[in-house]
Amino acid sequence: MLGTDLFKGLQETIPEEYKQKSEDELRKRALEIKRELGNRLFIPGHHYQKNEVIEFADTTGDSLQLAQVSAENQEAEYIVFCGVHFMAETADILTDKHQTVLLPDMRAGCSMADMANMEQTERAWHKLQNTFGDAIIPLTYVNSTAEIKAFVGKHGGATVTSSNAHKMVEWAFRKKKRILFLPDQHLGRNTAFDLGVPLSEMIVWNPKLDVFEGEVGKIDEVKMILWKGHCSVHENFRLEHVHALRNTEPDRRILVHPECTHEVVNASDYNGSTKYIIQKIKEAPPGTKWAVGTEMNLVNRLIQQHQDKDIISLNPEMCPCLTMNRIDLPHFVWSLDRIIQGSPVNEIKVDSEIASLAKKAIDRMFQFV
Picture 1 (cartoon, one colour):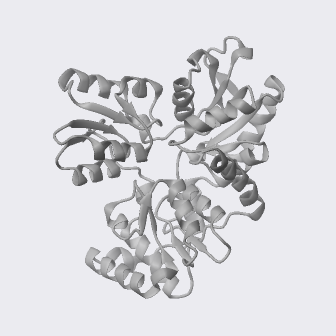
Picture 2: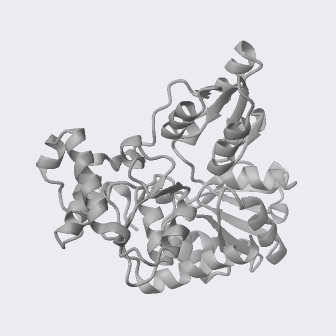
Picture 3: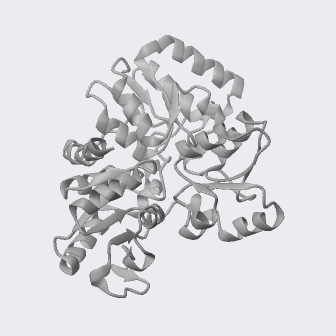
């Protein structure tokens, strides 16, 4: 699977005219095309997208939710996915053959998803099998490539989301003694710890060096094998940010995503998925004070939507997810225009064999949550 730095070579270059148009011109054109295509067009928008794009979304949500809703919308011929590459792949896996999934900018990738590729995973699996035998089941966060989902599907595992990770880890432990958790070590660690697995029974696998990291201890007692991957955004929330707020504003509640490090999650008041964070703020009493540890576009949107509450980012120097922000208004309108012209760009098409195996991993998750 190609990394985000290589996606640029897979797409046409956006014509300069789109970059030169005013925001009003682009907005007007987007509305015109939406009216013209009607139900033939469906635009899912991830929570982390810019407001200039979210404005045109037919629905907003997390990655898997958007892929599911896209699959349910049988009328839509074109799905212009406003998110990142792995999300559009999942939408293509779940939608029907008559539906075309498009990503406005192929450079919109995910650094976490790129931290696990097939070559690394096959190599790791071979070595882990030699160490532990047939006592491992793989789980992968949905924030992974179609190839990794396919690998997991092939080996009897399943996908997980940040909302259902607890249920899926419990399911996996009923199947096997150990779990290989890809590609986000923090979600895996935080979830297993919540379920009573001590940190001493978790170990990190470094895919670049093909070795375990840290103190191994008694290898037979290892239950969680955590892939050395992470979200570049959520790792920017640090324990020093929590301590600073505890010292200066002890009444400000701290709410973070479980992609943050274990130290940050453990020191916070609440942690949960994007959906959980949105709901928690929505239900909070007026006048309450919150520091939120997640992507900045979403934090800013929560601030705008809940002005009766005092909301800040846990990290005052945070910026939005850079790859998610590749989807901007010029690329979005260009993508819509090309549909009208009969020559869509940046179609996301997953190989049929990979898609079939990946769907097995996704379907196993759907069976148990």
